[in-house]
Length: 179
Figure 1 (cartoon, rainbow, N blue to C red):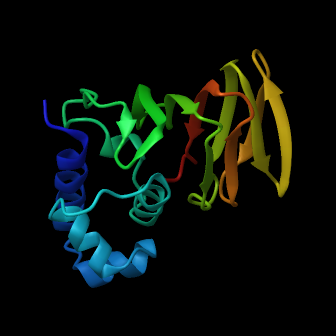
Figure 2: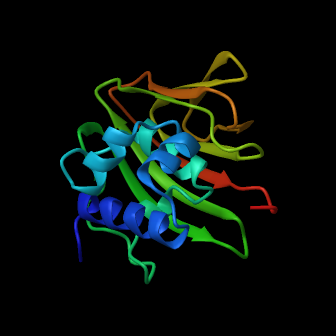
C-alpha cells in the first residue's frame, strides 16, 4: 500500500491528466499556486489539510479520494502529513450513490484547525465521541461535548478547536447531488 504523500501526488496528477488541465489551469480552479501544486506532485511538499480541501473543492472531487487507493483501500497513515496534532481516519470513502464520506478525527494538544470554504452546497455533520470541541460555523463558536452534534454549511469558513487535551469526533461530509 502506498504512503499518503505518494498517493496525494499521484491522485492529483491523474485528475489533471484526465481533465487535460495544466498546472496553471489547476491553480486558477483551486486557488493553490502553480508552484505549490508542482511541489505536491513531485512529493517535495505535503499539502496542509486546508490546501488539500482547496484542491478537492476546486477540482470538484472528494477529500477522501486523496486518502484512498483507486480500489477504495484506505492509505495506512492516519496522521496527516506535517500535522502531527491531527489524526484522520477515513471511515467511509466518498460514494457517488450516497454523496457523502465519513471521517473520524482526533485533535491532540488543544489543536485548532481552520478550514476554508468547501464547494457550494457541502454540509458537514460533526458528532463528538470524547473530549470537548469548539466548532466555528456561521461565524460563531459553539462548544460540543461527548454525545453532542452539530450540522452546518461548510461552504463558508469554519474551524475546529480541541478544548480538552484530546478530542475525537466523527465528521460526515455531504456533497450536493449535482456534483
